Image (tube, rainbow, N blue to C red):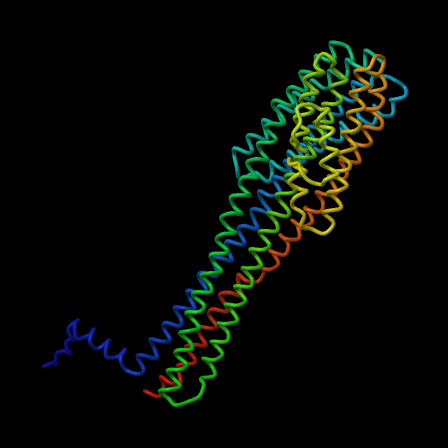
Length: 473
């Protein structure tokens, strides 16, 4: 008769057996080793999440939404300058002394049109995953096509009706009003919305990912200290129980854990700094200065429109003041007061806000202070030219001199100011690119290095306790 197999012990007895095994010396060693491996896994998990947060932040700010903002900022400037050059061409007429200026304005108009289409294409490509932004880009393209049609009609009609420097015919002015209203009320607001939407994405991403990286540092420190405490406790336990000084493999595991924690904390601290620099010293200033340049250009065009369309001169004068206040904001109720305040505030280097005010108050980069000073001095010169121009325009027989000033000295001074804005922006663009590049370089290799380090430490722990466990076989 076949002997029946032995029955399994009741579940309660099995549980007691497990407790007994844990209370034995080999069980305690296995328990320590298991805790150490779990702690290694915890360090790896929190570090991996924090590294991924840093990588995601750099991707959005440096490679996705951030470049989209720059592209749409370039779009806004190119669009506004198109309209400015169109106004200049119509104002100069066929006067021989201004012929070269007219030809140059037409050339710049075509150049800005090409730049606008390129920037629109670039922004559209970068926004390929967002249907709403794709639709906005298409609507801008449609509106821009209507603008170019009106601008072409105005230029063609003006070509057929030669006139001296000054306002063109009523028909030409009517076409230009339609074109510039379309630009100001339709095309430019849509372009700005693209910039605004992507700028919001960058800010939200920075706030969430920067905070996540800082939280990751705290969690890496906490789990790392727990891991090191467990390894030290295991080392002490084995030393006391087996009367040996040091387990070299466990000591190596402890040292490797310490190095991993310190290196990870250093990396995450550095990545948080790169994110902060890219956002605060780079992106914010590039966006702000791009807006300042576009609005400055638009205000400069309002100065031309002031001479081009006398019937709406008061409107263009007020609009010029409003835009100037966005760039360099002071307490002033009219342009005369504004000129005085600009002189006083530039001399004092304080007491003003607006885009240039924010830039002047946040000087952190090499060469930035000198660039800011050049920009402020250039802006002050532009306002001096505007004051002279409006004085001439309201003086009997002085309108022609105002036009000559506008197309000559004032145009050159504005170009100098504009170039100072470009140079200042370049300083921040360099800081932005450097921060993103350093952040990307810092993360290279961690996708492989981090899990390999965790596996190596876990193996060292298991190898370190193996000889002690083998003594009980």
